[in-house]
Image (cartoon, rainbow, N blue to C red; front, side, top):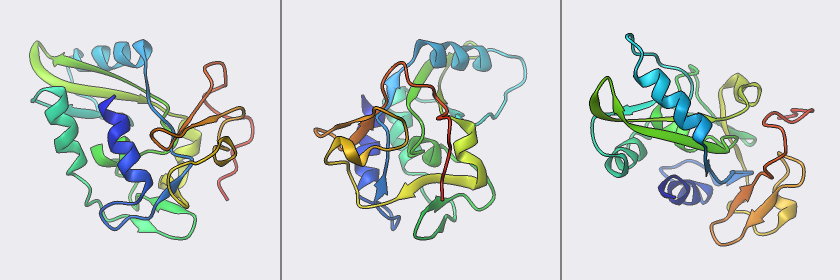
Length: 174
């Protein structure tokens, strides 16, 4: 999946941002796709978290969104933060807590790419985009956000188990 290729790049640190830890692999979600389609076809455009809209095909849209990386991030030893809670398309692509994505290529009856991400919104409070760390996961023990997570060593991304709740019972970011 194209989104995971970009997330794998992000785990190593890109554009002056630090490497990550606990960056999760995106799975395609029919529920997120349905959500994207509903939002796209409403009369008034909305901008929820997980919002990506472009009038070009999906692969080109991902490339364009990836290039939108200059958002004035606040960086410290624990993570990368959006200072104004201004979630750009780039920040959504590299949101460490996002675990699934659904996209549509038709909005308002026109060809437009729109993607929705499934993420525990409680974990994005305080504007954290992802946890700073040592880079791609190398072992299951590197994946600690969701209980029972495993490491996909082929792409360095953590994998959330399907039956694990989207929001962990104890959300401890500090």
